Length: 246
Ligand code: MN
Image (cartoon, rainbow, N blue to C red; front, side, top):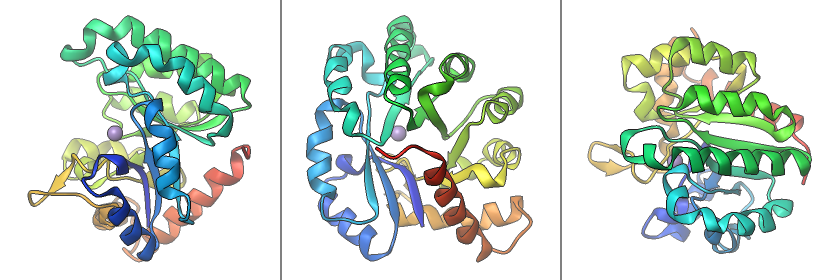
């Protein structure tokens, strides 16, 4: 099982969640929302084999946290994964859109200078400007668009640009989400939860709940449910094989 976008540090007991995820054999990318969280997260995962931390600066926090960008750059040499980064164009974050773009540009330039990174992107109501920047910095690494919710045309452009995608139970519970997922190349799809703020039956999703996507993915990919995690594991190996070691 693979949870390629989970906010482990936002659960009330992150260590307990990680211990259970590790016991269940889940590969987890623990994304962070601010570079100040990097060290604490690294400490949390230090004895775990299948958990990695993403160095993030969430677009929704950029308005108040953009002064932390030197700290983000300070940790970048030791981070193989970057995220959560991106742009948010929804009304409550429109006011910071220019600074979001400036900061994202600076992060992508840094990733390119560092030799490329695997990056987990947020692109809510901002798919086109996110893709514009991905196109401008091809050396920044491999983008993984998390919970993509743009248009079909934007999705086609993302595929053309070499983007990967992470999809979760929440996204696949809507017809629009399934329709978009259908148009993603199966060999560039990973699963995610975006937990703990995503829920199922009124409780927070857990990293192992990525298995809730298998039924929908089996249908989209015209395969059996048991073939889905096999494909996903192969995808993860291929992603890691294509990315530079750090
Ligand atoms: Mn997230």
